[in-house]
Length: 352
Ligand SMILES: *Cc1c(COP(=O)(O)O)cnc(C)c1O
Ligand code: SF4
Image (cartoon, rainbow, N blue to C red):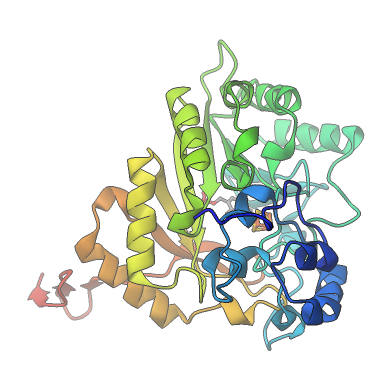
């Protein structure tokens, strides 16, 4: 990989017709996929299209970004707002669930649209994000929250902002006296590595005189996403002093396999990215074909414990449907009631 022309599109594919023209889906699938695209935004940027093997229908990159008719099927329990953002939104663009942290969503566009996206009902639509006035209202809310120490910029993808706007926003947040940390969650370093520039890395720095820190969490799900261009971008950010984390969604047919995750997490630490969270997929509509069971996820985590450096082990988390927040979902090693602890090989030891 990458694969050769005639295929290789040079612009982002945004419709079923674009995908057919690029040879990524057969013409007979176009009508169904056009219905999916009417419902949920589609975007496959060139950097990711290049990584797809057009001959492999089960390609793990394809599965993440090319729509499928399975998205039209609703499964029991799926929710339009799976993690309860709306119920915890005091002002447009802000989600305030925990006392010390708030989410701020300045834009609702992404460089690509993940087919399993937990915010698929809100991203990529007519509402592109906050107007100037709405952003001011959101910042005024945050400024008034004395207990908030961290602002998580998410969306959508905040790195879709031009670097000067991103820098101005981060500077405003870092100048709030109570803010210690600004965290940016983004898929741009993987989806559009060309956007990772020295200007963007500079924007991801706290302004002079501020004691706050800015961290970047990169959304990455498969080792093949770490192409040479992506690795160069990560090196640029790390060299510029931006602390890097990753977050990964556990996905059936993509990475719900200990060998794939082992290779992903090892590649991330080699690229100076610390695996942070492995998310169990949320109950987003039309995503049942991506969801493994919690038992499968826990078995994979148990397997990784014995074969992977601790630096490369993320926490496996579930965002509780309805908005109660994220919690680790194991596996557990300690059984307090029984007075035992299980080691990485599954042997049980007494521990009083
Ligand atoms: C996920 C999330 C956070 C960040 O949680 P961490 O566990 O600190 O990564 C903060 N606020 C909201 C509303 C969230 O959904
Ligand atoms: S990058 Fe995040 S917000 Fe955007 S489509 Fe993917 S999961 Fe959704």
